[in-house]
Length: 281
Length: 347
Image (cartoon, rainbow over the protein chains, first blue to last red):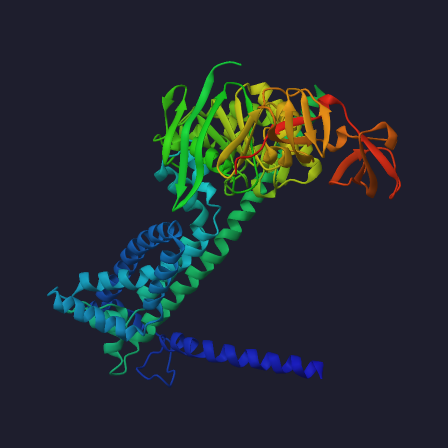
């Protein structure tokens, strides 16, 4: 009985993983296909990668996506962090209200935000293009930063900033030397969220862009109207980048920790040796 | 005593519509160990936060060496604080926590190291430089907090209930240690607590507060032996408080009996309150005393018994090392000096 339960759960997990990963693997495998077919693998080739690099539309879209993701993340992180810290110092009523208001853009269907922004930009007669897309991305990324930073700020001892100022720190120094280091995990989480949200956004970007400015999602959407394995090559590269990023995010802190431990041990050993040599004297 | 270092003049503080300090006048001297004592919500922590600079007084003056500093931000005051839950920086090790203030002042690294290790030695944490502060015990964190404040060589150290989070035994140790540190560095300590025993055993001066008003300022002996009113008598130690009236100087009447005493300066027949400390009352044979009653209960408290004696007017609380059976008729005896007469509270 117990054993059968175990087998059942293994099968269940296997199916889950199959559903998640088979499409990705298929995409990656077919990016190396020598023919245009998406169903028959006719031989290994780097043809689609070459096509990808030579496609000016795609390459400029990659540039747009990356630059917008980087700038929007930076701006949203600063804005969101400052807001979260300010929020925590407010009266309770104000706090609760603003947190709820902040949740609306997150809960809101993306299409509503998209149309809202589009109408806003056109009613203000702002030419749609790169700048509008960037503004829109900052706009939808900031709430994510606030939601990931705010709980960290709230869990701080309210006396920490006071302690820093008591020891001679100006309010700005208290912020940079004490508050920010303590809420770093929240800030990083918000940054990562913003970056991924911005990088793969389609709906909002599609509505607020213009003048032929397109990011990866928009280009891919336009390309899917006909079979084009170049998308597979692009997807494969994006997947590899994401896997590498995840590995770094998860493995680097581990490695840093190990190195620190090693250093502490070395210190201990040195102290021990010092004591020993003193004894010998 | 020596020079005044801090003066509070008519200090008030309102939070929204609530007045938490109602006119505080207080002088604090150099090298003094002063304790602000009172129940929670009495305003003692607010006074500390005003002196530190985290709150601005609504009215009144805060003088530091004769200069009004009520508008000076905390980072420009020569005052440092040990916070209630220590507020150590968890991402820094012991050395970096203590060095925080010096590093902000861009002090030379070798000087910083020297000062930090000297300070850690003072608080008994020699060799703890590289330790993670979050892995220290409560008592050790406390010491780091003290070192972090003292390393900046402040003129005044503020301590906000710093022993509250420690267990009873450690608290006793730290009381002794704090007093020792204060003598060694020779600066003013302003200590906030609600624990009367802590206040009495450590301070040069105790300031008893209630409801945003100072009730009494005095040495621990004064506060204990000569409480100025019912609140102080009740808050500091156990006491029997009896209404009576002053017949004339050195003669007080309570429970319908006249007793000679040593208090003077009251109006004739003025209504007063009399304090009798439980440990000052002796139980004697009934015929040897003016005040008679029966033992109503006896509880063993460790060092002494706490006995309640019922007289025809009231119950008296008595601390004695002798055992007396419940129901026994006894007399109560005390000397003239044991009777302490106070003004009744206006409210």
